[in-house]
Length: 273
Ligand code: FES
Image (cartoon, rainbow, N blue to C red):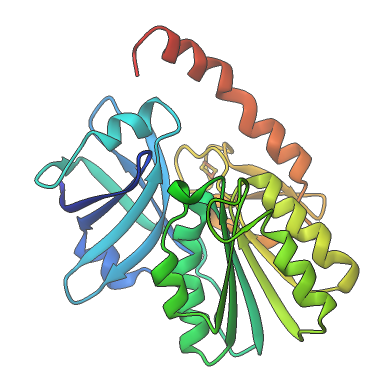
């Protein structure tokens, strides 16, 4: 069992757990994820590791309540335990000194981008961060991102925090201003990552995206997380989760993401969530 030591509500639908998981905390690297199962009947939920503390043996998980399983998970609190936490899974982010790196997090995607931005910062890069959300209430980890960034741009869809607009707006301005961007790392909704890749493509700016498709086993066996990258099938759980944003088939990915929406709706309406 994996005890939850701390729970925080970052917004009404976004929860943070600090979980005792010493073996994972010892080995995990920025960019990696875990798969948890709340209980025997629980669905397997992939979550990126938002932070870790090797001394304390803890990992930090941040998730948004978007479906039945994450809603059930959100009802747990400090003192409760999670049945299984498997990980660390996936390939770690390649960290080196590139120069100027733009880290973009949209919505809950700010959580996984934070340890990556921190690692780039610690490696001596000039980190410029852009974080965005639908509104101020849904914006998370502003202070953490500010600490690891030379400058931080904030956007919200409704203008309730930062500037009104999309995360690609400051990115376009940085490019237009001649900022020598060597790498863009974008994590968030698929449509956001697609938009970022379209902005950087004409400028040949290397762009990495971290994909979070439907996962089951997390070991490359089930094929659930299949994505097409450069016209080749890849498994996000073992080959990723990071891929070259200019090579990902985002349209196919969005279609696969929608596969279970109807089942989720039926469950919700049946009152089983
Ligand atoms: Fe099964 Fe990746 S989750 S192959």
